[in-house]
Every structure is written in C-alpha cells, then in structure tokens.
Image (cartoon, rainbow, N blue to C red):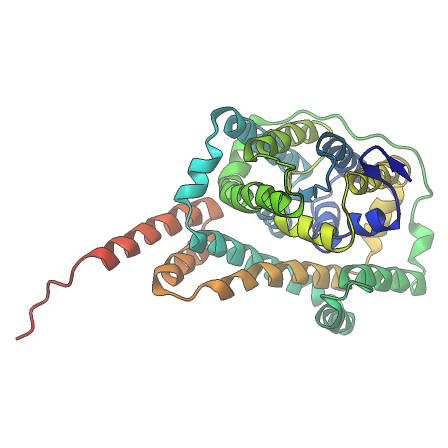
Length: 374
C-alpha cells in the first residue's frame, strides 16, 4: 500500500527491524535491570517513531542513547534516574538547537576521545554481561556462539534468534504460567527531579553529548544526504528532534532517545525507503505498550539472564571494535586516557581528560627537538 510518499509493505516492515540488534538488548536491560515501566518505554518510543516518520517522510531510527543506557544498566539506575536523564538531555539538545552550538562541540572533540568513550562503554557493558552469563554458563556459551555465528546474518539475525531461544527456555521451564494476561495500561505520568537530572548528566550525560553529536546528529544527516540526495535534513533539525522527544519522554516513563547513523544504515540495508517504516514500527510499539506491557514485564522477569548477557555482549563488542581504527600515537594516548579515567571515575571526566591528553600530545608533537648531540 502506498499513501503519497509513504509505503507500507514487507520491505518497509523488514527495514523497520534493521536497528533491533542494538535496541533489543538495551530495551531489555532498561526494563529487566532498571525496572522501567514497559508501557511508558514502548509508547513513548512508538510516538517518537511515528512523529519522526511523518515529519521527515524518511526512515529515521529512534534508539537508546548508548552512553546513558550502558551506564544506567551497569550501575542499576532507578526509573526516576532514567527519566531525569532524558529530561537533562532534552534540555541540552534544545539549547544546542537554539544556539547552533552543535557544530562547535563536534569540532573540538577528536575522534580518539569518541572511540575512547565507546570503548569504555563496551568494557562496562561486557563486565555486566559477564555477570548475567554466569547465571547459566551452558546457556551462556550457546548464546555467545549464536552471536558469533549469526552476528551479520540478514535472514536470522542473532538478536532475533536469541529472543526465540529465550522464549523456548521459558516454555520448557513452564515460565509462561506466571506471566500476566494481556491487559490495557497507559504510560505513567511522573515528575522529574532536577537534582537527579544534574547527577545523571555528570555521571554519563555530558559524555553522551559528543557521541550523539557525531553519530546521531552529524553522521546521520550526512547519511541521509547520501541515501536520498536532495532530501536535506540539517543538524539543527535533528537537534530539535532529539530535544523535544526527550523532554516529552521524561514525563511519561520514557528513556533518553536519539538517532543513529548505524541504525539508519541497518534500516536502509533491510529495505526501509520511506517514513512508512517508522510508522509501522511505531504502531507496533504503541500496541505492545498499551495492551501487553504487563505481559512484557513478566516476560522479562523470567527471561533467561544468560541470554540477556549475550545480547548485551553484542553491543559491548561492537563499541570496543571502534578502537581498531586507532593506529597512531597521537590517537592511542588520548583514547587510553579516556578509557582509564572513564572506568575509574566517570565518563564526563574521561571525556575532559581525553581532550586534555589529545591537546597535550599535539603540543608535544609540534615542539621542535632542541636536544643537541655531542
């Protein structure tokens, strides 16, 4: 079916699942570990997908902000902290949209620091994943093998296969008997603590900003221009988008959300070409949130932790793999400083330390050799 520039078919449906490999494990972590209300999580994400699809008439991935998601899952944040972090990021992105500061921040952040933040996140997530895998080592090994064999399989993606494996384990153990029947529920309406908003920004939010600027904003805008020449979506457009949807999500049980070049590439690869992909995904998420949120909460409570660990490990490995691109001393030292400081303190300090190390290395490299040979 085609309605003006929107298409609704199997290709768009397949394309809408292109970024599920990252979404599923982080969504499960938010609900399973942090206790986020599934109705608020799913409905707010679904609304963000639909509105974005209608506005831009293009596929536009809506994903968890990875720095905040990994920090929240690894440190077992409360739901109020997750929602406060969404509010903090919403305020930040609206300020960036109004002032046009996005480009300036992107310019002063070297790629080595971005990779350092990604690597620190990957390590944090891998440590947390190991705890989950050890709850059932045999199932954990099987799940890891699934990740290795099917990681890039377009017909049987590892994330989907692991979900099916987890469901099969629940069935064999009789766990479906304890899951609530489908029932109507609406997202919770909640207030936001400004103190928690600031605390979460210090813990991980400020470190999220450069990653979101580069990957979710600048790179996404560039990829849209490459896939759809002539269909310009500016960095400022995306900044407004991320600001508004995070501000709304904060008060209705949502999570910090952004776009992502990787997610867009995945959607395009699997067939998404119009905003119909976003609308289909959004309607599915809203339906699940309104009518099956109680079932989803129960399902995640009995879902095998070892399988969740393998899914989290997928994201962790992907984040650490970005360091492969780092080869020169000018890049290696800031990356290492960013990782060490991030893991020993927090990612905001790691970000600042990485930038300082980058500038110091550049300065030392530029200084002439004044030693005199005798």
